Image (cartoon, helix red, strand yellow):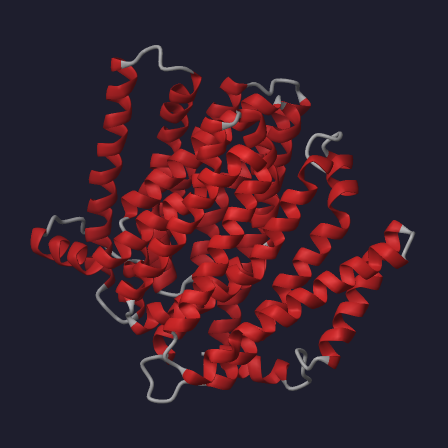
Length: 471
């Protein structure tokens, strides 16, 4: 088990690094190679499609992981899931095609939805195999599946940029080609690594049972999908594609800064599922894990804010740095809350408290949408970022109130201490250190020393955390 956990974390981290590097390359080429309006329209189309396909999963993706991790027959779960993505995905794309022919002059956005949507449909079709690999804890297989599309797109877009052939038509061709390649290679890799038969048989009774079981999680997915990109969609439609280009750039970099969470989150679902089946849960390990996550979350925010304007303006020729200073500051304040919420959500999901999770996302969605509607028209991108921060804070408070493990009640304290420590060290660095290259070393050293003094970093944490993750 020890070697397996290390291997899983290693492969999951590796694929995330490759994906984030390729994603950064794609994002850089698009943001600097085309105008802000076109970049904003592409991001608006992607935001809409991401929300729709997440909703179409109806929560079956997470439920499939949990079932497979619990020992349910993989072939049976996979067969039902494949049928679901085929029917729902083709149904949605059929509606898109119908709309295109009924509204031939709907504009460039509808055309982007139709064309880019063809590729995202392929990614949707590949999702059952990826979730099955996660449930089986075959993170090496998942790594291979997950990097294909981004590597192809990144390489192709760089070539187009170097040959000065970067235009909207070629960008769409690259996106769709990468997504088709990912579907084909995902199926081939799954068959090769697992040797499981693909007996795709329709079973109405099993499908209805799975849908009924996933109903609470369906509500969660519906809310989280809208929550994840509502601000993008609202800015794109109500403000402008240019402001969306600026906001999406800042949000994408912020999203990439949560790489540590993206690495560990998929590993925690099967791990917590096993742990919470036991009579005694390792609470000391859980506390050590959440404290470590808060340290990392606050530190990444510290780094982003120190170097944001000079670095981003330098690499984007002044397009996305200074204009996003306030936006990125507010977004980085969200990171510790996102880490804490994921930690608590994973516990509740392992406990099977799906209805309570649904209630939390309804509340979070309501706060975020209300904040967007009220603040975006006045404060534009900063309003969207603040609405997201308010929603994250409300969700954390709700989760803490619903927590039934009394020993975990103080898990909010490391969030407060680490965030305030990072803010203090960042302000001290910018006030006391005139040399830009010395800002980060000074801030990092003072941050670590302050956390040591406040007992957020303990010598015993390394061994305790390792023991916990190796269970």
